Length: 262
Image (tube, helix red, strand yellow):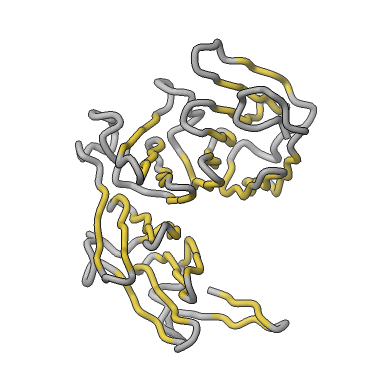
């Protein structure tokens, strides 16, 4: 884990600090604490005291230490645990709560909209009361205000692929980085950006009650295998297996689509 400040880098490793493991998958800064999701648990670094605390299967409800993602919530921290679902931690009370796949089946979704689609979690993201879970077997969404779940799997829904590398939340919208392109959704409307066999960009739009619409694009993602996404209301950045892509959104319209075409 590296910190850049005052023109200098400070590198935290497992041997020179309290970082749980040198394999770091995700980082979040919450109220003066740096949270690092690693292959050996989640580490919490207090910036003022320069001290670490490790959260793993020994002192939490995690069943194993392998953490892929960490995301700030409203007063809580969400941890994406490999084969362990989602762990919610309240730093003030010290409490932990686990969200697990209710049917416990990795290969099939037996009970849709009842909890995390599977326990294998590749990423978690939170914004505006909505918690998203990306997995290698589909997508889950938890409305923290209504305490309701929704889930999506490939072929039965507009989800372009079950293999989701990570998820990025902006407002009540989620961006999905998959092995077959990028998707953006609010849970009802969907826009999928893919690359065909000739390297041309395609966008496919799904709206409730309407037939899907497919359009060719004059540009395309650098590669269909997308590993990470960052976006706001004006632009999006896509890390792919063949370089970095940048999308700039068109001017807003009255269209109900989730986002305009980059």
